[in-house]
Amino acid sequence: MGIKLYDLAGAEPNRRFSPFCWRIKMALAHQGLQFETIPWRFSDKPLIAQYKWERVPVLIDDGRAVVDSWTIANYLEDNYADRPALFGGGAGRALTRFYDQWTGAVLHAGMSRFVMLDICERLEPRDRDYFRTSREARFGMTLEAYCADREARLAAFRQSLEPLRQTLTAQPFLGGESPLYPDYIVFGGFQWARAVSPFVLLEAADPVNAWRERLLGAFGGFAREAPGYW
Amino acid sequence: MGIKLYDLAGAEPNRRFSPFCWRIKMALAHQGLQFETIPWRFSDKPLIAQYKWERVPVLIDDGRAVVDSWTIANYLEDNYADRPALFGGGAGRALTRFYDQWTGAVLHAGMSRFVMLDICERLEPRDRDYFRTSREARFGMTLEAYCADREARLAAFRQSLEPLRQTLTAQPFLGGESPLYPDYIVFGGFQWARAVSPFVLLEAADPVNAWRERLLGAFGGFAREAPGYW
Image (cartoon, rainbow over all chains, first blue to last red; front, side, top):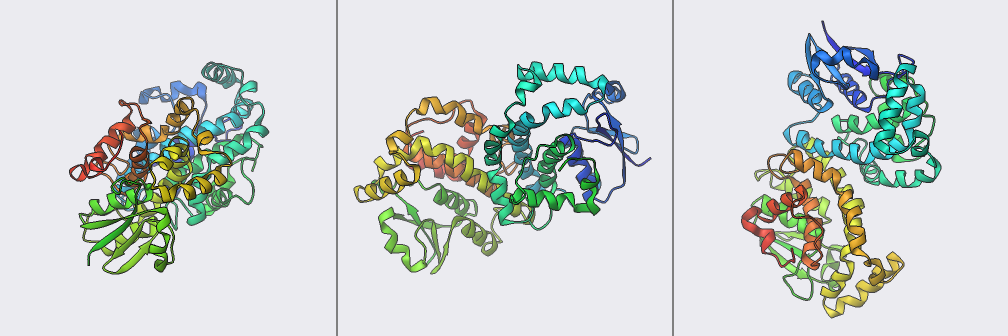
């Protein structure tokens, strides 16, 4: 039966924008595992209700369901131990947690104010009301207000990437000479933005952008082939 | 001849406040290595000029000098490979870089506006003019202005620790079940603040504070025994 992944999609079935799905797709490619993705929309919650979960990614491996990106990454590392390592050992696995938390609290939170309105515009019509209503309640304002003044916010967003920038000036990947799962965690955020928004978040000469380009080109250009704006 | 470490000191020779020296002292304790510290002041640059360096830590191991905390940590890992690992393998070593950069760009930069004036007041009189002049030129204002309104800045500082807090809610140390060098990198920042300033930066119930307490108690309370305020 192989590996299947429920993967968040827009109105165009191939526009895949979940940062959490992207990290798993990159992990699967890293391990050289064949997989098939199933486009999934916010209104498709009934499709995954059997797994007692209501978000993606949901990975189905030979009929067994695994949910939550951190759990899936650990599952892949432990169950495909003969494949290239995602964490590079116990220390690497433990040290990956902070990358996950930094990505949520700083990278995704920062990007959110650039991409949320773009996401809404790229959803299937049946997803838009749910998305707008739930996000506007969370943010306490309209999506238009939340994503206003992007140009004015850009410098502070880029500044928040300074630890990433300095690290990627010292070495080509967060994992060192080659990427590890922390690279895919962070890269997933950039794929989120790229998939939905033409607003360019990085300067071309930024070492973070050079690293992003290396990952766009990895695994035969797997990430670059996906629909995206920059 | 053993291991000696030039270690930044205040007017009281035992008040040691360099965050970069603290990470190395914790690394030496982690490895179970005996070492002696040499109190060093900013005006003692001539004492380390022979090593073509003008900052501490400077580590002298059986007559061989190693400078810069990252280089020293790598030296210790490579030269005392029979001792408890600081990085836990090649992936761990590469993944440690981002902790170093985050600590500089976020933790130290944030703490700086809480502690700089306190540092100045705890220096030997011969160090104070140099410290005040060089820092005021860097910050573009007096130390008093730079460290004003600490109460008002506290919430944003604590918020900036959110990735650390979430990580340390999921596991006891950044390194997992036991500390690794990334723990000491971040902890060094907290020792910097503790050594010079009575201003309490963390709530007692903060998971970051619980982790700090665990490290204060590590190695027989080595870090807690050092002069400090909280």
